[in-house]
Image (cartoon, rainbow, N blue to C red; front, side):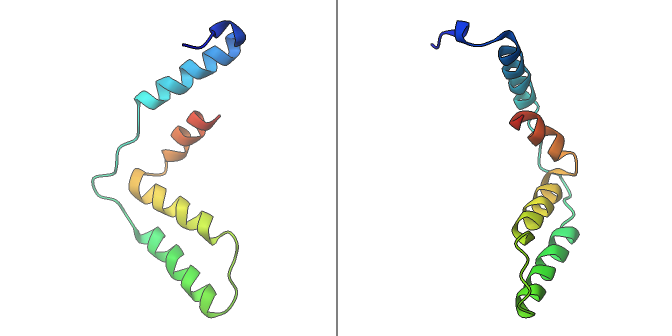
Length: 83
C-alpha cells in the first residue's frame, strides 16, 4: 500500500472522483448508428485516392467509432477520467 501522506487533499479528491466515474462505465448502445463512421471512412478512402491524406483522419475515425458505439456523451466520461 502506498503512503497517502505524500498526496495533497486535492489530489486525493480528484482520484476519488475519477474512481467514481469508473463505476459508471458507459455501455455499448443497443442500436448503434454507424452512418457517420461509414461517411468518415469513405472520405478517408477518397482522400487516399486523390493523394490528399489528412493527418487528422485517424482521429476523426476514432471519434466517429466511439460515438457510434457509446453515443455522443462518451467524451464526458473519457475527459472526466483522463483529467
